[in-house]
Length: 294
Length: 322
Image (tube, rainbow over all chains, first blue to last red; front, side):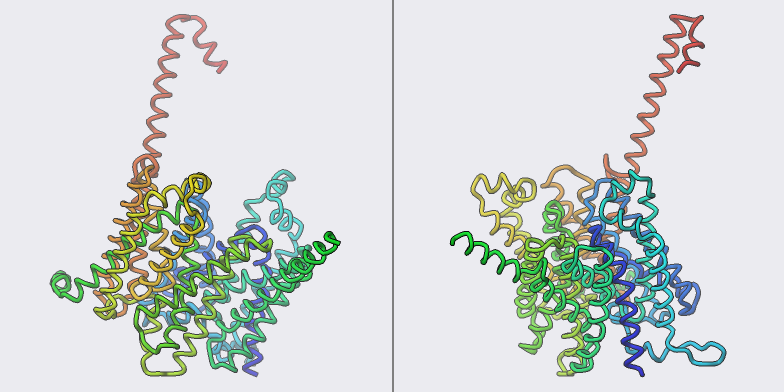
């Protein structure tokens, strides 16, 4: 049963992250996802210190505020003349450093480990359950992540057309009257909330990996956005399941194994994808050059 | 506290550690300015994360915590990572940001798998390996500190010797190629220098935040000047101050990791630069705007006066028309 809960948690993380990751990859903002996933840490710690509890609501609020602040600061520095990648680097390292420092200073009050910040404690998920009407209804993380996934699905589903145009052609989106900035911040808000919900169970690194790697893998497999989202979710869940298997085999970090598997899947797609894979393209080139020679 | 600081400054071991982290900050600041101008700031982040599996494999193979073997392992991992990023962006439709994200997270994931494997294996010598994530300068052995200081110094000297080449490479690689410089080799060499800076910084600052020492001082220095020479020097000084302050404050408490403190010191310098730098700073911009407003207002007033002197009867009518 514990295995089931862990895999379910990881799959939920994988689904929510890869859903949003598709849009990040298309808008060339993969590193902003990386930045947000690091910079929410001080938000989590401060919310924890103020509210004094691991109440997920406060944490999500605090971290979402910091997440949006990150995006805002990055854009502000970028507009005032700092290169975009450098402004990402400055903002998130500063906030992450602040978070790490807060964790190590208030290490008694904050029940967070520095290692756990990076690679989470998914192994403890099944033990932190919640109860409704006196019945144990499963781990808290599963409910929180399920809720976040539902919200993301609802928002993306409702405004699918708008998000799609914004992802492929922001200029055209602005021209036809879509509030591009609003949808940008909406997407970033969803990324922050997802990051926070995933943070405690899987840590900053798995969030980054799950945001970028499955989406990039799916990007190599299809030309349609809807299919890309479905494929990336499948890749994400697959890496969660296989990664858990690998972790139990090797007795190593679960989050680390899951990203490793996602990386292997990406390399497989990179080499063998029917439309964009290196191998097929090389073969096609060879047959074509042979035909030309003959 | 001051007595403690005084003690620390007199302790020869602490002096070495302080000197080492200053030199580390100096070298990463200098290298970071070139990386910043070449729009490769986040490359440092990816390389720093990618160094982790290299360090772990080096430890697994040799069983020793010698900085020399770590350097080899991390340099190999860093070179594979840069090659991977370049290969993926060139041979598929994946853009550089995604490629960076993929390499960064996958390498770090592999690194964590290896790290937990080492920790669970319990070979006895592995304690302190987890310090690599966030750095603890105070726990360094004297020989490692000396290695770090020497390597950092060599990096700075190399940058000084190749300053002209790197300058050309940063601003106009096409021209550099045109006059016969080995651009690809220089490019790889600069990448290698960044990898070395990251690796020697691992024990003091940690892999997670090492990239900040490459990025933040350079961005801060860019606020103050338009000349590369000045920028490199300033960035080096900012880096050295950050390293010094971070190490000093981290020595005050037993549980304070050095990396985040150095990064926060660098960030404080960055905020000062954003606010008070001449010309580009926020305060200078506000003052400039006020000055422009004042001169424009004065001119307008003068015009109105002149007009009203010339045509006293129509003056009011024209103003209404404006």
